[in-house]
Length: 68
Image (cartoon, rainbow, N blue to C red):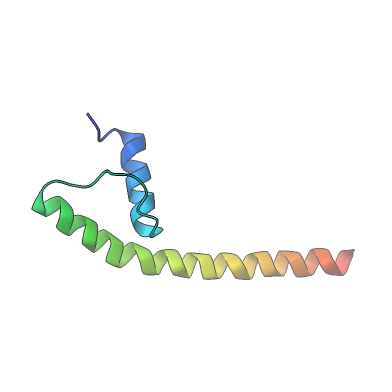
């Protein structure tokens, strides 16, 4: 079976990080539609997450810079 938990997790991460790594794709129409909906919701959430993490890293860097 190709859809083991680690393989499925890698597929989910590659969909919403826009990497598209590998050759795993859903074969059914329902699976393809689900992937599109997942990407439409997941990609903007991923971008917001990275923006917030950038702010956190910037604050940490400023704090370390001030203390040094």
